[in-house]
Image (cartoon, rainbow, N blue to C red; front, side, top):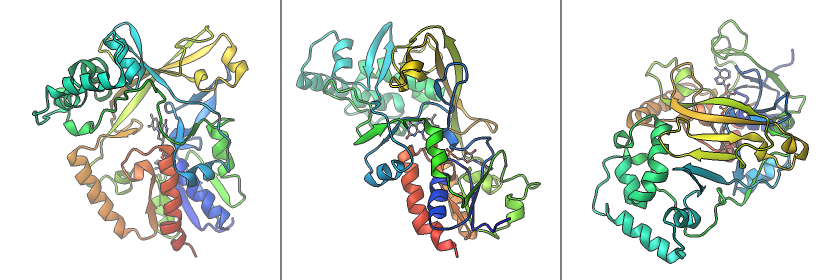
Length: 385
Ligand code: FDA
């Protein structure tokens, strides 16, 4: 076997980006992932029956204003001209999201101008102007006033956290953007789109290099396999993108996450929702939102026009040990514990920790790629001979 300069644990976007950079610079890289596919949470597959691209770990929309990241990703894929928009069902009506002038005028059965709508929201939020928010409920009302908060935010947030917002910390929402125009384009970034021939083809092209070897279905903590933590013992530089607490044997306790469960429905209809994402913001619907995957790719006309479709309902809850960790909960206790784990990295000079699991943070794809490009230059490259 050829020598290996670098082991990468995790074939998600962080690991793939570092691997691509290292291989391009002539280093031999071996990536392992415990899953049976590359791409981490951004992985997608084409459904056998319908040809619809399904994002296995939930809807992934690429967007960025970072020119370097945009140029980088365009080396491996082109992007469609998809523009993300979200709607919400509330009390038997469908509203545009995020809350904008269209939402406000529909909700109040009015024709306010931007200035009138802004004055109204300020007045409604003013009710709590002198209240020091004790919980998320107070904070929401203080930001956008009771009517809009209670209609669009309160129950949705309760479902996301499976917790009464009066029992959630105010810090979860620092701001609730309200737009006083009819612009309901979801992202404000310079660039957005979906990879033309799917996420997985993009990722395959990133590692299409003879210097890169990939071994799937392999757990770094399984001591019976060659590329395990126990066997490597720091002999080769490692980029570790798994959970940071797990790396240290969870000796300081677990970091907490929320997870998402998906319930799939198949319909013999051309279109079921009429849009890619529908939020359900009321308490009587148990899931937070539905995703209709074919609507992400209207340019794939044959797939889009067939009389079959796939919809996933998304249920949010606290993750237990065996669940996929998706969103960091980030209580004060979690942050403290993370800082302690972070300090333990100093004892591992041959290991670079990165990615969303290694950093106990939510990163969008473009942020993950950006941080991986920086980590490659500043931390990984200096470790390689
Ligand atoms: P990622 O989790 O992708 O990869 C880590 C890899 O390490 C995994 O493949 C895992 O199996 C592997 N691993 C862990 N432990 C291991 C072990 N012991 N041994 C071997 N391998 C191990 N972003 C965006 O820009 N737009 C969007 O719309 C969305 N949407 C979205 C929805 C949901 C539900 C989530 C959870 C996330 C998003 N994201 C997103 C964020 C996006 O998923 C994220 O930026 C990247 O997946 C992060 O890539 P990483 O490589 O950091 O982690």
